[in-house]
Image (tube, rainbow, N blue to C red; front, top):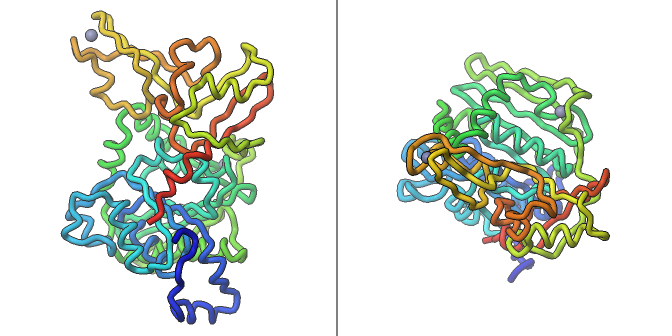
Length: 386
Ligand SMILES: [Zn+2]
Ligand SMILES: [Zn+2]
């Protein structure tokens, strides 16, 4: 029955011997894990063992044979299946007390901000700048702490970022990282992420770093002291741990939380841009506009006369989508992230059709005022707990 899980008697007894441990808080906790690869497996396994009550997994990948040396949750027979779905099922085997939801999707385009806002902590187990930058910006917009992890060969690092307390991931990010994401955002992200996915790692370093990430999350859940903008680097070749403290950069524009978030009992699939402008605008006027946090392509065209007016999300297009099917030249793209009452081709398009992910928070600007709307009716669809 929803909301009434039978707890296994005695299961948490030894955890509760820790003086500050609050199993009831652990059972209430909501943690999102981004990535179910080597690191994600270790993180998820620990969360399930501990009885973290609500776990949300997102990953876009399928299980391959090479995952089996580093992924405690996967078996031979799982090859070809979605990582997120298989991992979710295995967590329920480990601990039937917990609720697990999953999404087979792309970090940068499929996570609605409402999901991130709903979480107590986000734990990242991704292997590229683009996904980390997305998670950092999303978490700082809605005030959710996040814990970054990275592993390569026998080395690894884990960092904690807490909105309002210290540096964020982008405060000290070198310009090279942005060159990397410009390339990724402008071409086929899922494919690029996939190619970057074969990082040389071992289950041992994944265990160490994944465990540090989960311990930091536990400390945050129990209101223990955790430094925002701090981290730990471990070199497994010489067994050296190094603490790092990232410098807060006051010029970093990421530390700008969404203000005035209003909850709407609507879905992105049943709300058009016109509907949202009507909801937001007391006095319908030309200065009211939806400001999306991604670009939409309103038209693709070619000198040969080819034209495609279907609305698409730009960062979901790959090189083939941007090539003229008639003459194979690069297509011209008409792009916008602003929709107002003059956007004729877009007004009656639903937000979902334009690529707004379910349970997203969408900002409407009117004059100098900004109001954000959370599409709460999508919550049940996204949190498909098993
Ligand atoms: Zn910053
Ligand atoms: Zn053409």
